[in-house]
Image 1 (cartoon, rainbow, N blue to C red):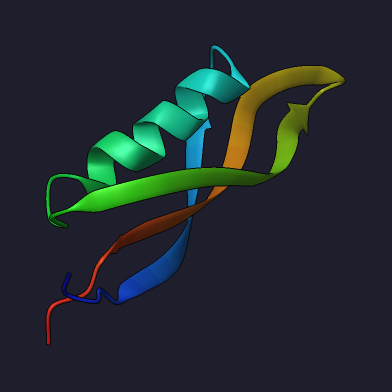
Image 2: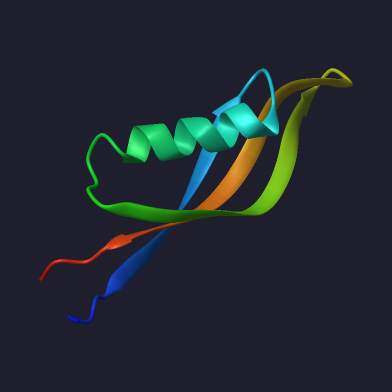
Length: 69
């Protein structure tokens, strides 16, 4: 069995709907330029507040993908 190496990056996805959509947006956007995505881990959730109202949900995501040298 061959051994693999994975790179981990951190992204912040945003959405006006939910944290889940924010995380999904981050992964789907990354998948347009990165190949062999493996695991996405949500590490932080927060919200943007303007005028006392929530205007955006933000999800910080650690995303791993197979590293090819």
